[in-house]
Image (cartoon, rainbow, N blue to C red; front, side, top):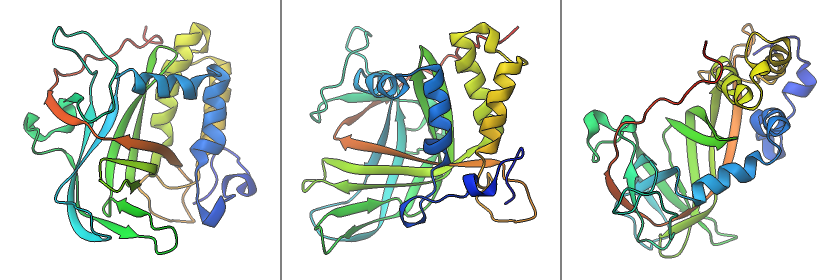
Length: 265
């Protein structure tokens, strides 16, 4: 697709190792850290404190080197609470019973998540010996990241997920979530975060419009994953890393209350 908002093709299409694209990491993360220099540590701290997590329920997997057509359900974990309803930090030892966000379930059924990978598989690297689980199919993943006390909602479309499994399948390392962010949706979410730091950054401020243009210039893909050199890019490639530990699925949590938009009139 064609670069957006006057961006140079040489800056938009520069690939990483082995042709890997991650315009979010290259271009958007510096914008976020300009608003909150410790944004990465804030996000990691919120996960470690039990505020939010992504859960993979991988069915029928054992110690073999390879598997195919493994059914995997993807869930979002809500705040981890104790018996008194107080938020607690996870132990990450397999005993945590994490409440599940109902918005990612069909009809609130914990056995029927909206994102399911029916053809996920496991393959062993003959050189390293690592057993890697791969989602196989694609789905939309919503991440609610805490930055500056405000939730930045990222909807990753056409997402592919992978992770190197531990020998007992109880965890994973070197995980990756890769997909596409809709550019204008990302701008709308970042506007809320910017406004939480400084109300003068709320649109239609000229300062934020400058930031919005930088985001548009980072567009390097079509939001639906298609390729069309006659169209202007309206999506941003994204790759996020993660590690994984064992947990238990808890009960279905109460529906989420919408957050306050600091830029709302």
